[in-house]
Length: 422
Image 1 (spheres, one colour):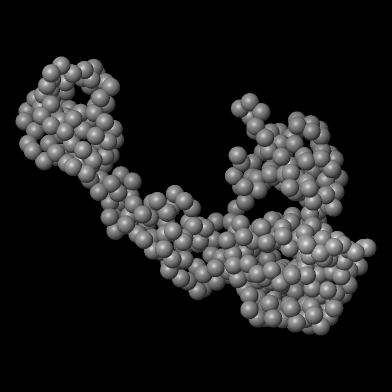
Image 2 (cartoon, helix red, strand yellow):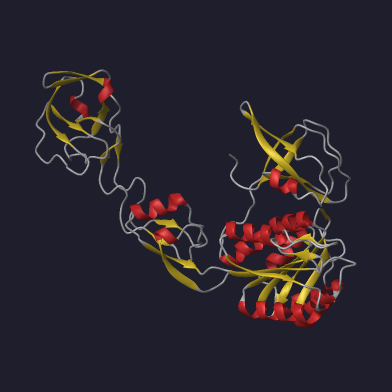
C-alpha cells in the first residue's frame, strides 16, 4: 500500500507521528521500508526493438503466439525408427535434414538417418544416437534399444502457444532477447527510461582536469555515481559541482526537480555541514533526514521536491557509494518498473578476522575468491570511510548486522556481490 504525500510531510516535520520512527536512530531495514512506501513505477511506456531492449523493464506481458519447437524434431544426429521394430536390423531408406524434412513413406522394417533439428516423420517414434549403432551396407543394427520416444524434442516443449513467457517488470537479459526472437517477436513494450540527474556540493571540490589549489580535492563522487547509474540503465545527467551558494544551489535544485524523475546530491546532509541544502530542501520539498545505524554512510536524506524523488547522499566518497548501493539502487529499480528487488547474498567463510563493534550494521568491502572448489571472502584491508581504493579493489560487501561484533578468521559471513562473480 502506498503512503500519501501527507504522511511524507508528517514524517518530514514531526518525527513522533509513528511509534517506530526515529530519524536519529534509523536501521538499514527501516530506511529501506520507508523509502519503498513512497515509490511507484513510471507509467509511460515505449516500444523498442529487440536489439534496443537489453536492460529494459517489460511494461506488458509477452504471450507466445506459437509453439517452440513448432514440430517434433530430433535432439541429435542418429536414426529415427519405430520403437517396436528396434530389436532387428533396419534398412536405411533416406535422410532428414534440419530444414529439409523426409516426406516419403517409411515401410515396415525401415528407418531414416536424421540430423539434429530435423522434423520427426509421423510414422516413427524414437531416435537413437549414431554412436550407438553399427552399419553394414544399407542395414543399421542398434547396440542397445533406447526408451520409447528417446531423443525427440516435442512440439511446444520449450514454449507452448498461449503461454506467458515474460511478465511485467522483468528485466530483459541476453537470453530473453533470444527467447523473444525464437517466438518471432521483434518489438516489445517497456517502461520509459528513468531520468536521473545528480550534482555534488562543496566549495572544496574541483573537477578532474583542473589544477588543485590548497585545500581542494577532486570530485570523485560524480564519476562513481555516473558509473553506477549507467550500470542500472537510467538516463543520466551530470549537473556538475555546485558551490555552497544558496542562490546557485536553489536554481540547480529546482530546475533539476522540474525536469527529472530523480535528483541525487552528494554532500550537505551531515550534521555540521553548511545548512544551505537543508534549508532549501525544507523550503521547496518534503524531505526526511536520517541518521542510519550503519557504517560507512550514516547520514541520508530522502524525500520529494515537487514530483521528483530526492536522495541526499553523504559527501564522503565511500559512504556515498555504500548508501547508493544499499538504498538508492533498489529505489531506482522500483521506479523503473522492476518486479524483483531482492539483492542476492549468500554465506561464505571469511579467511581473516574482522574488527567490529555491535550496534551498527557494517558494510565492509570484501574480495570474493575461489580456493579449490570453495568460495571464500577476505576484506580489502583497512575499512576507513576515506579509503576509496577499497571500493575499487572489492567485488562484494561483507554485511555484518547490528548484533554482530568482532569475528575470528574462518567465521561464516553474509556477502553481497557487486556483480556476477567471475
